[in-house]
Length: 135
Image 1: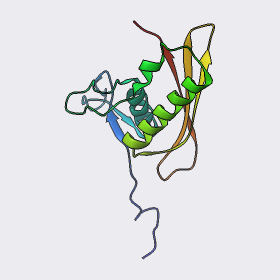
Image 2 (image 1 turned 90 degrees about the vertical axis):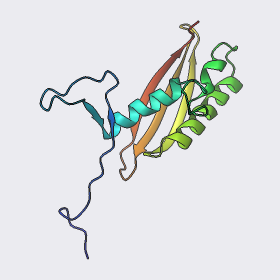
Image 3 (image 1 turned 45 degrees about the horizontal axis):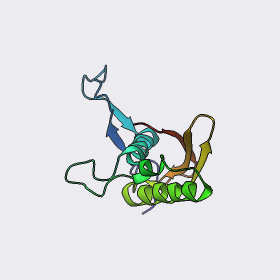
Image 4 (image 1 turned 60 degrees about the vertical axis):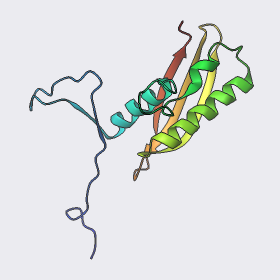
C-alpha cells in the first residue's frame, strides 16, 4: 500500500499557551503548535532549576549555578554540555543539531543559541536564549 497525501497521517505537536489565553474562535485554551511548542518547551527546560518541579526532581537544567562563576571557556563548555544533555533527555520531539554558548562580558549575560529541527522535518530552527544573573 502506497502512501499518498490523503492516507499519510500528519503529526502535530501541541502545548498550552503559557498565559492560558482563550482562543477567540473556539473560546477554548489557546495552543502552541509544532515548532513554537517545542521552542517554548526547550526554553522552559533550560530555565527550570533541577528539583524545582514537584514529583519530577530530575527535570530541568542546573545552568543557573554556573552563572555566578567567573566566565571561562571551561565554564561555557560545561553550560553547553548541561543544556545539550537536558534537551536530549527531556525533549523527544526534536532533533538537536548544536548548542552554542557565548559570554557577553559587557552586559554580564550569557547568550545561548540552540539549533534543532522538529522530528520528520529537515529545516533547522534557531532558538536564542539570554541568561542573566538574578539574585
